[in-house]
Image (cartoon, rainbow, N blue to C red):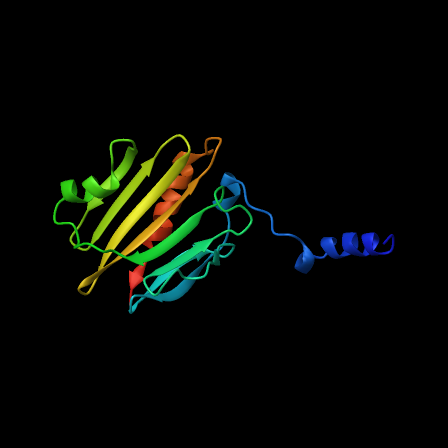
Length: 170
């Protein structure tokens, strides 16, 4: 047993064998991104995601999820699904789903083909983006829940928004 301990310590020092370390809130802002091509419910799309977010097993053909495996709740996640409802016709209609009274609304914006909602509480930030994709609607949800309260919500909210805003049907 004494011989294996130095070997394990030596292997841990090699980057390929090092345990993944979750990033702090500040560090996520500087993680490189790459374009990911995927498909949900028959809709192909691209999205720009941090290289350190790995894809979880899809729950079904209508959902794709990327998150850091190191800390399920304390690290960012991005989920793309098909939206089960019609694209909202009014801002009020959209807000009734995504900007509930227990949330602080940072942004709520509706255009012809896109709805963006950015909300927060003391412990999380959530971004929801709906994008028309033919007769269907893609829904990107990104955010992080964290206890105790998150640091830098004002910086992280636009970062999450940028991730979801990069989603484009092909």
